Length: 387
Ligand SMILES: Cc1ncc(COP(=O)(O)O)c(C=O)c1O
Image (tube, rainbow, N blue to C red; front, side, top):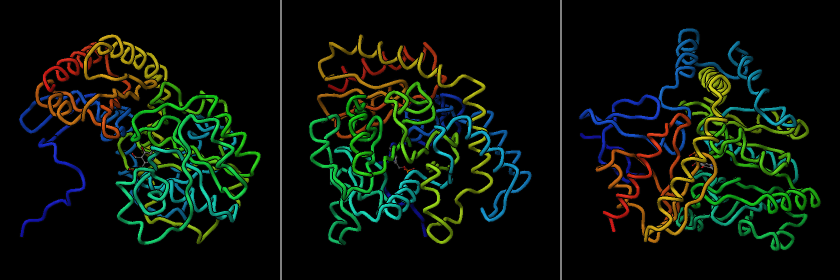
């Protein structure tokens, strides 16, 4: 019998055997510049030395342990998290994926409010397990499951539509969920004015504010957290992807007041908050701080976005270049798949898409000026070739 992987993702026809920094290698020895980074995970580069070192050390001590037992690596990771989390978020839990972080946050806000409604944004993506899927906007992902019924109500607000906020945010709302920059929805940055208005209205009606920084967080946008641009203090922050440097881990960080509302039996996960996850997070934070990752991402991100805007501004198929830091979207006037294929096969660059018309770049923080040039030239060539 031949066992095959369920085909949940399209096959890119490549076998990758190794990754290091901003590069990956295929089984024929070809080297690719990786701006796909496993859906944005390898922001610290592949096999970041700090993360590898922390994981190796932990493997030599103990790999698995229930969170009912303490470990030195847990204490170290918690101490390190105190350096990087907004000060009001005093309690954390580690889970294994972004969607699981969303699930735990939903339990916390519903249990804390006893309300049944969530406000989210049109175009948002928060994951694909049933709770997070209810939040995720894209009807293509969830229409087929809707006959099963709904656990709670979700009302969608148009991103940046300040005038609509009061229409949807009333005192039935348990929480407002948003990504500071909608990722999967097409790399759409939220305006400061919109987020601040949303935040004040949520405060007025007693709804909690949950910020999903699973894609934007940990330096990707040239700030440690993308919410720093808005000057708000969320009640819950969700992180994932980059925070484990490639190890599967996500983070739920909550305000102290909310932490008291959830206790033993309310949630659980066999692998949640395991020693290797703590080691990966501790190593990733060490890497972030020691190599000035946030500053570097801000600097090279600006150069990348400006060069793309300059060089692609007059290209026929380009509608807009947008993004913040190293989270970049190139909105095309056509479906991006042929361009992605061309980038992979002719330019040896791996990228991804967002929505149905956006070419998305999620490079690691260490990309060089030469890499930027290669990305810009590669996209320019592929857009002309695949016209
Ligand atoms: C903003 C955001 N939230 C949640 C998720 C879900 O994370 P995961 O795929 O790790 O479950 C993603 C994944 O792309 C994301 O970008």
